[in-house]
Length: 189
Figure 1 (tube, rainbow, N blue to C red):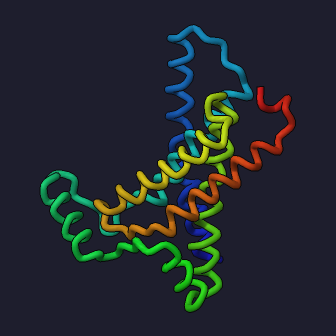
Figure 2: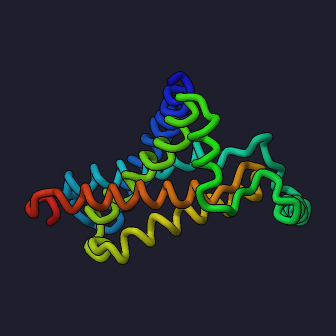
């Protein structure tokens, strides 16, 4: 469980660092647009933005840190990884099976449950914020697309790229959307 608390702590740290900046930028935007803030919506929007920043802090950090000054070298390294399949799993279920067979309890929780749970807010918050995302056929593709974007970026960042992460993240988004569907109608306005 120490790995879980480590990730949650790092995610929370990134979110807390970004909070004052978000509050400043959002306040300036509202003042410029001369819009009266609705507290509930502003709270949900802040939670969603902070969630996205926390998610990025945990999924897009390079290991080791990536040098972005030479885009050609970055692309060449990603293409070489793709050709060699270094750190890349494109076989659905392979990582899940390996984790279930050989992984420790902590690895199972962090990898399997973590990949599902981290995307619950992605399926829950956007439908609350935007009416056009209140349908299964728009909410779930949003979650799958966000997860696919993360996996693609991880190719360039030297992190593992795994179709099972995409599947588990999308499942988490679906579960988040189903939780949204269970909310009373008055909360969805």
